[in-house]
Image 1: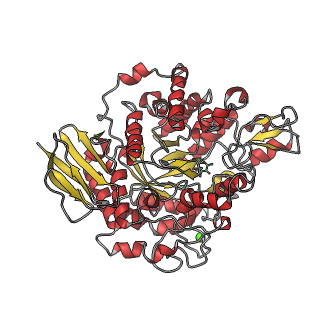
Image 2: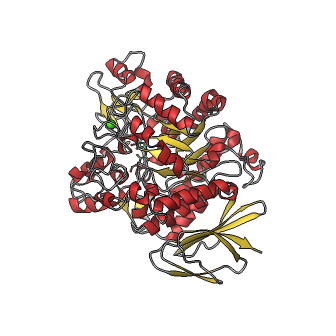
Image 3: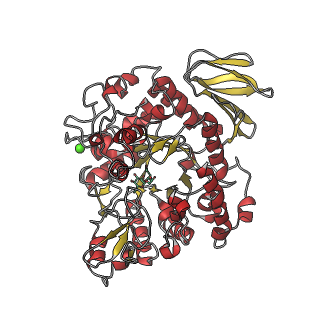
Length: 583
Ligand code: ISL
Ligand code: CA
């Protein structure tokens, strides 16, 4: 409820933001939705690799570039066309590489620059593109810029970061950090505070300084020159800081991301980046749009504005969540987020389709019942809707959440911050927080990839950096390779189906039974071609009466062997189909 209210309030920002750029009238005048221009990145099947946990080639227990290179044939076979690498840069790894020490060096845990280049060559030899994470809202406190910046108030790098005096003997303002505690850290060397939206070792860059922007553009060019085809941009809406850095109100404190994502120069900086780097190099861009409402989406993705190609909204993947806590949810609500997301792009924008990434638990544990059948049903949801497809390593074999007994079982700085802010302050019991973190923790997605049924899952010959899910004895690539009814086999099938049916990529999306609490049924339409997709998203059998205007045509893809027939279809638990529609 609260998040809905907030979404509406943010509408009022639009005219303000649009005043500097293209107006909505311009956006409305472009070609109708569904006729969108054909582009490689709209058709892409992007596979996200959390390198540390994918495949270890040298037995040190940490996934690496060579390990990934050795598995490229597996990904090619799956139908992947683009790899998205989580941060591959030099980093002290406090936040899994989202704390970058040197943007021009690779993480030595993952190999050398030569290894990275071999990986790029291997991907290109297989016609796969590679995009990398661009983490430029903040750096590591070990970055040379920050080292210089903190050294004195008049150092030329001082203005690369955001330094303020304290106020009335306290912090400069009341901003909280996303990883617990406050967003300001006093630095004894100069007596001022620096801003950090994330961990205190992740100081925020000052994008109002043109030198910082120039540095970022140069870093992008550096990686483009090494063969990178685009960027996934980390918390990119946060780069322009709110004017005056005033205190947040009590209501704003409920979700600071809304204020942080509405800085006054955000769209100027994105447009500049587009004109200086993205457009000239034809580089693809996808922004992580934390804090951005659906109403604001066209500001980022309308092609005419020349900012980003697409953004990630979290509402679908995070239905049933309030931050790190769970809350009851319904299928109607999930479907509503998908419809809103689909419409939010406006007539000439584009969106993304995903249920998993390195910041979210496993979809099959969250929206399914951990069964292979539910993993297949969810794949139909991801591949069936409009938007560039992003799948996260292990999703294609139905990897599940892992069980955590105690706080020491977690690796993630985020989980530790939540613990300190709650159990540490006596506001919640250890048991209550553990119960929630078990379901929502980012660590659920970060366990090593399950290649085979041995105790190290074929991930490493050494000791894995993070526990493997013991269910690798049942859920693993080797077993599924041999089984034509496996989740992996279904992913191969549905990816190949999507590639050979442009209606699945470009067709308009229409939810034909939005109130149905058990079944998600929608059509996709491109010119004269229309298909129907229906998915039983429950663990029970369901009967679904076809809407009067629809006559079932040929079944084109089915998660089960049994074919639904008649006007009232009997669907097995988690059964889903793609069918033609006959006139
Ligand atoms: O995952 C979250 C908390 O559960 C989000 O608040 C998350 O911090 C937000 O989506 C931004 O995520 C990105 O930036 C972070 C990094 O830790 C995440 O891994 C990254 O995806 C800081 O760089
Ligand atoms: Ca290794």
